[in-house]
Image: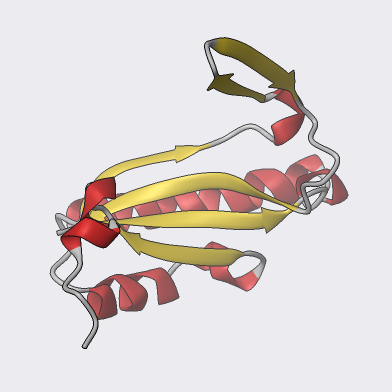
Length: 127
């Protein structure tokens, strides 16, 4: 079963580091990704740019709206992700606990699933 490990970091954290500190943090994550790959767990991994270069798109009633970042209400950002293949949520949490970045950000662990699986119609009726 696939699980997504989302790297949730405070806005501005990257800018607070020196370039050397940033490169050191990145190298730790690349090394960890390689260890996951060697264990046959890593499906994909990417680091993401900050929201200052992002855009949000919505289509409502046929109208498309694009909002360019930065987004003032945002206090955290998804800084990257690791898509891993493991059997259970508990195993995914254990793997997330090995993540070097857990020392400076939050690792959100979520199973990959079709969005309809959590719809009311797919859930059994409460008794």
